[in-house]
Amino acid sequence: VETRSIASTILATGIIRLRVGAEVRVGSQLSGIVEELNVVVGSKVKQGDVIARIDARSLQARLDQANAQVHVLSQEVKRAEVELERARQLDIKGLAPANDVEDRQLDLADAKARLDKARRDAAVVETDLQYAVITAPIAGTIASVATQKGETVAASFETPTFVTIIAEDALELVAMVDETDIGTVELNNPVYFTVEAFPVDDFEGTVKQIAPKGTIISGVVNFEVMIEIGSPVDLLKPDMTANVSIRTAERDALAVPTRAIHRDGFEQYVFIEENGELVRRNVSVGAREAEFTEIRQGLETDDRVALVTINPTGQG
Image 1 (cartoon, rainbow, N blue to C red):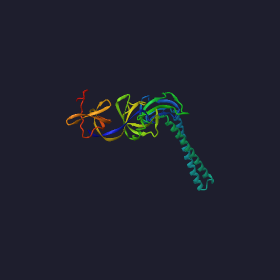
Image 2: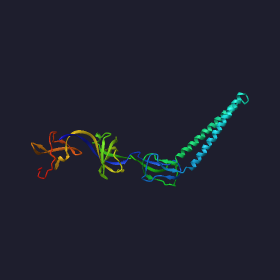
Image 3: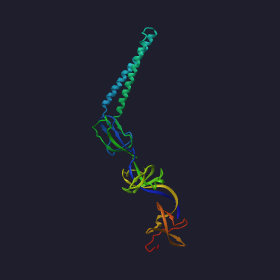
Image 4: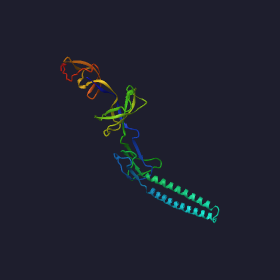
C-alpha cells in the first residue's frame, strides 16, 4: 500500500455546440451581378481569402469620372491662385480696384471647397468599389452558400448573405454539473471526456466559464460549465453528447493496484500478507485513477497486498 496523488473528479453529461460568434454570415453591401464565386460547401478558407466578386464596371466608371472631376477642379484652384497673386501685385502698384484682391481670395476659397467636395465624392465611390470584393473575415469552413455565379444580388434594404463560415475553433463543450458538485469546480480545471460516437477516443479540455445562474431540469438544479476543447476536433460535431469528467483537485491518499481488489456481492476486499499467509480484509474504496484505486478504510501504509486470482473456493 502506498500514498499516491489521487485526483478528485466530478462526473457530468454535456453537449458539443458551436460557441457564440463562431458562425459568421458573410454578405454583400453592394448590389450587382455575382461575377466570381470561389467557394462551395465544405471549402476551407483563410482570413482575407476572396470569396466572391461583384461586377463593378459601373462603379469603376463612376470612380474614373470622379477622379477626372478632381483633376479639373485642381486646375481651377491653381488658376485662382495665379489670379490672386496677380491681383496682389497690381494692388501694390495701385493699378487694380480696391476690392479686386478680396474677390480673387473668395474665388480661390470657392475653388478649394469644390475640390475638397470632389475628393470626398471620389473617396465614397472608391470605398463602394472595395465592397465589390467579398473576403473571408475569419478562417474556417464554408457551411452554406446562398448564391451562385451570375445571380444578381440586391443590397438596397438588407445585406444578402453569400456564405456562412464556421470558425476553425468553433466547438465548445457545455457540461451540466449538479448543484451539489458545482462548489468545487473552478476555472482552468482540466477536463476529460468521451462522446457516444467514438467511445474509445479520449478528448481533453479546460473549464473556461461557470454559469452564475442554475438551470432546473426535472426538478434538479444544474449549472452550465463551459469547457474549451484542447484536443483536435476533427471527429467532433455540434450536438454530440459527451460523458464528462472534471478534475477539481488532487490529494494524497492510500492506494493499491486496482487488480488487487476483489468483489463479493456488495463487499470489496483485498488479500494482505500476515505472518507469511494471505488474509482477506474488507476495504472501502474511493476514486480510481489509471491502474490504481484509492483505499479509504481497511489498510495502512505498511500493509502488503497480494496480486492474486481467487478461485470459487476462496483459495489462491
